[in-house]
Length: 457
Image (cartoon, rainbow, N blue to C red; front, side):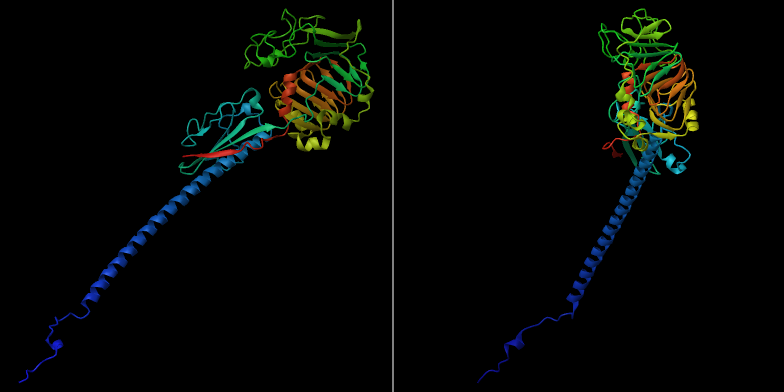
């Protein structure tokens, strides 16, 4: 008998299942992962936003500090270009009323010596020494200082420093003047006129004659037996400051000159005067013209027809190397009327090329220029010298030079119209130190390539 059989499949036991339970667990896990990723994304984004905000704030503070410093530097350069006497200003420089108060509060500016150029900004602009390592310029650096500007952000968290080297352009692009008195006309004197030249054998150079009438005209040149050829020779003036050796031209008795051993003790009314005796240790009197004398030395060149033939424009160009209009526009640091010039010179002037349009009478008790910072005075007209004027630099007049002068000119005189009725007791000392410094007193500006800046954290 055949047994009843069932399909194998019907005999397999199948456990009951919860419909879609596994699918729900996976969805929950996936949701948790998505939530975690979203949370991390939001956290990273917020941190990134915060960092960007901080970076932006730091950049804004740094930019503000730099702009403050740059604004202060522009102010200092403008003041220097305008003829500011940097020896008379404080460090830091007191900024003028035209500077906004907010800017002035966040900026400190000083003129500093290049001898110590490792400048630093203090933590705040109100520090006792806001610009550190800044030494006052002296000597040659008076004409070529650093302008240093420190700028701070409003909260003092950012500082910036900008440094610029300044200088004047050469007053004589073709080279310094090499003769004490030059004129294409006659050299007329009515008093006692003396020229001293220790550095070469030229004194008077005239296209016309040497007209002295009853006046006393003298010239002194270096004694050929004198060993030194310039003022810096210590064998002749040991222990003296180099800057004053050019004035130590007296005889061995030393009764003609003051002895100044301290370079900082610059008493301008106590200088070497022209020797009166005919033979000195370092000087020889070459010319002695007057009522009882009739000697003209080889140092006097008069009636030079080539010099006499020069027009005023050619005479100017020969010494200054430029046409008058170009020189006035590009080299002169100030162009003044006679009235403006008289006011300026009454208070003294230093280290400039000053152009005066019109006739000028030069008077006052203050020295004009100095050995370190001479003045080049161009008078487009006649020039009259008042009594007691001490002038350091070069005087040029397109007209005549006259006056009742008892002072001294340390440098050189260029007079296209000659000297007429020049009375008194004036003396011209040809001085290489003064004339050498005229190569830095033209229009003041920045030295190309000297700009640099850096931040201090």
